[in-house]
Image 1 (cartoon, one colour):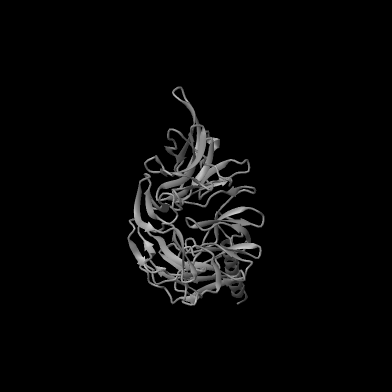
Image 2 (tube, helix red, strand yellow; image 1 turned 90 degrees about the horizontal axis):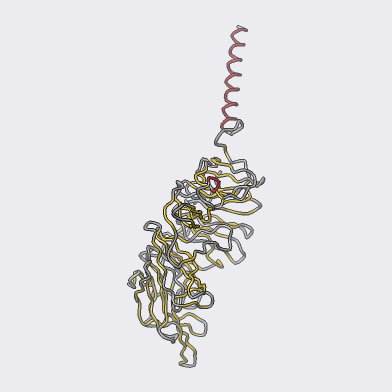
Length: 445
């Protein structure tokens, strides 16, 4: 009997010990390639991209984590990420200031230390391609070259065209050009008659061709097409507003493609004019938004003594690249200062009722309201509309997260900042730490 009890107790003790060891292993107590980050406090971070995000510990060490909180990669102390992961690769800066391309296992794909390239100068995040310098010294050719390598470290194309001198460095330490469906939009320097002028260009990453956009002149230090800047290219197209001749009151809306071809799409646009009638001044002007997701906002409106009044016979709505109206917003009093553009298939509108009180709603690309206009109790739209979510900043500085149905998901006081939603996750910064929340407002790991 005693011997049997002893054996039973020993078996129970062994089972308990095994469970303790298994639990400790699951919690990363004995190390391993992946470890759980739930007990770590992060003081800095980056948005989620390619399923992972860079986070920095209080010891100033950068980790790469999954949405579950598992750490898949750790940089050495003093090293830092210079880009998010894209198509399985990212760019990091080492302690000796060398910039290297790595994969998610931390293996180096491309490095100036290999001697193949002299310097990595830019990372094209959306395409996973890298702009590099290299020095060619052969019997046939000796010169410095600027070109693009892919995420396997292979040379893809050289950036070169006759009289173009590239100015790929910006004020920031690491410059990433703007990308739209395979086209880099970048500012370059063109040398003509011993004068440098800023000029934008479009570089087709797939055909290795460069097209100078024929901008007419400089205006107040900005590159403009006659009168207005082309603020966004998408699917090889952009739109701009231009005056006709020297008058401010007549003009048109034009489209421009990646080859520099300009087409008039909306005529008889009144840009700026004033009239005095019935004892009041009326100011008439038009506005144009960014060309995004195949549409751009355009309106001609009148303002009477600073108050918005929609004028009869004017245009207001969203138009396609050919100038055809896709969404008619004529009956809306859209408030000035509202950045009217689609993002993720939706657009937030700031509206005024007949008494001038501000309301807001969200519309889809057919023009349907997602909810009845609500009284504006916020100061500004804090983030882009992405992943069905948007963050609003209130008058007292606090933030409110709503979904596209108008439901309040979470609220934060003024000491917190919230990023755009990326891959259904937003980054929250406040109280001395950085963490992530999902689309229900719940904190991850």
